[in-house]
Image (cartoon, rainbow, N blue to C red; front, side, top):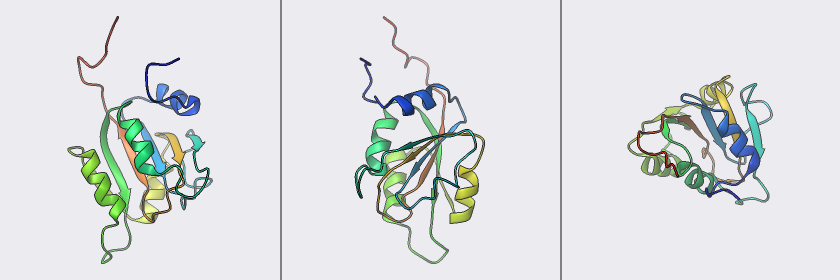
Length: 145
């Protein structure tokens, strides 16, 4: 048994192979994961039923397992208000920068060969997609026996 809260074997395998600068996509239930992910990404489907699991729940566990250097969010066309999901991500990820991308630019970013993991959730909110860039583990954070 592992000493971490993160237990999903596919997620653990993908993260173990990812390093600084690799990306992790947390996709909402509307995301076209079969066509808008990187060629080397491991795709994990956690979309059991609408709303189970959502992006914030997955993000909460991932933030205890990996350092986040920066993030990108998908936003609606200019002139529309910022989605509630984006506002939430900015708060949770602070002080890491959260940059915005339009829908098609976000898809292009997620198709990057740097994408190590795509987690498809059942989040039913629109524009709830989040693209994380893995950072560097700070000195002194590795515990030894």
